[in-house]
Image: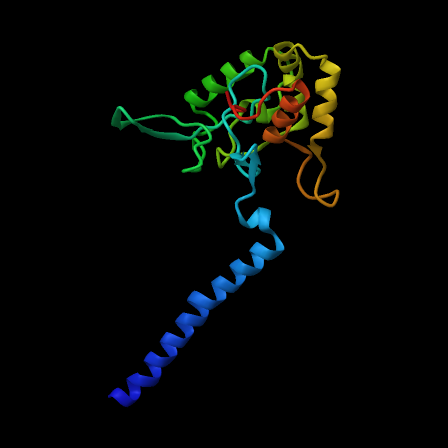
Length: 204
């Protein structure tokens, strides 16, 4: 019996060490060497403080910042765990509202977002949530919609804000993959740099 089990157990241990330990460690080490920024979570640091990730959106509320795509994430109410409250851009979770196109709650929320935008037509990503609730990007049309508000809040020339949006608009990958997009955190950091303000409280 032991003669049959010994080679089986030996192979189990060997392949566990190879595929479960050595292989993942080798890939992690190679990733860290070849792509240190991406393998570390694409974290963005300013003045020695991590202020976000290039892969995750943030809940900007101030009028002087560009706002990301609406997030439908919900989390437990710290005051009553039996209830849920909105937790937009909570990096500890990911998901959509899962509301049907005919849902009254969805229609009411979209109508409210359209009314808040104050102009027509409104880009889809300005009034609808993403599947993840964590999108770090918005469309150039969504950014253009916010230029006047941001410029007024900062006392800047709208043309200067427009120029920053254009400078931070990324084209399709290889010219064909995806859509043009604007990274909200990068744009807001550039705004703070132009205005000579601190980025330590970039989300406030």
